[in-house]
Image 1 (cartoon, rainbow, N blue to C red):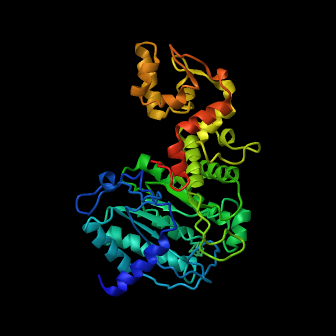
Image 2 (tube, rainbow, N blue to C red):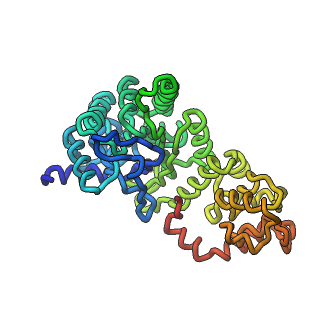
Image 3 (cartoon, rainbow, N blue to C red):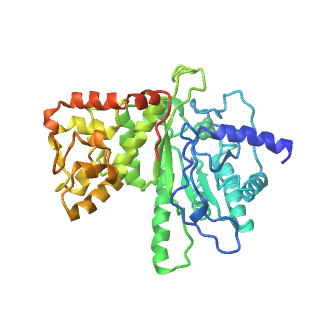
Length: 417
Ligand code: SF4
């Protein structure tokens, strides 16, 4: 690799690191036999200590940008070194790294140079060249350029596995404050285009098997958390709205890392709240996989997540009237709501109880964290019930029991996946 390319890579990979929406799950693009790569079996996620994904070649096409979003390191007013890859350079880098097993896919984003279509056209050329000329079957996550034409966005969807466009701030008010050139309406429009086309292609595929796949790994978005004063409720209500309106695969939450002296945002040196970021992911998980309605977890009376305990435990302590849950008779969906019982443990428990009553000694082998669950369940031989303990006492006991873990959380991000 020439020194010039190496330098560009250093600048443009560094500028891309603030985008966390790079999970590669959900794609089943198969190698057709004469290509290179196969996302169906080859992709795995790798997260750095602070939870960022590192398994993809994650770069910007350029960090030149005509916009001046205050929270972004590539903003036009920022005095930084700028660089831009050519189409050929990105293709060559991707193929080289892929062949050497350095990466399992490409995550390509970009600042906006000249205008949205000018930039999008280059990104489109890259993905087409990779797929059609290099026969590359690895994973591609393409960021859509806000304001790009519907035709180009749609065409890109035929070559990318996942597409995404960032909401940036959780509310329009926050966005207008820091990125007046952007709007949520524009994001909705592009997500809507992809959604509409995805449904259209899926319908066509039912009739014509050879219909090409369109964005097979779905679309996602990302919100910056902590740059503007939105509450956790504001953030999760927005996420819920977008999940429902556009069937998003993922919403990513990225704790804001102060990078500029701007009195509208936290000062440089303020630590990004990685614990908050993680609590938001846990809430997201509860909404998507545990059947919680966002309003049960966050509402006007409870607009902020508890940073000391996870949102499921927090919900359980606020709702003592639904406990204890009799694990020998309760509905599966209710069992999943018990702190200390995850989805797999709930499944195992429901299967196991077909063979007889469940006793305490069996819980550990079913994957249940009894030290938590004990306050919320009743087994065949439970010694006491929740009502005998005050929720505040339970909170204190659980916190004491996990003191080491929680104090570590103040500086490190929780393990998510
Ligand atoms: S448009 Fe994107 S790259 Fe440009 S300043 Fe805004 S966030 Fe940064």
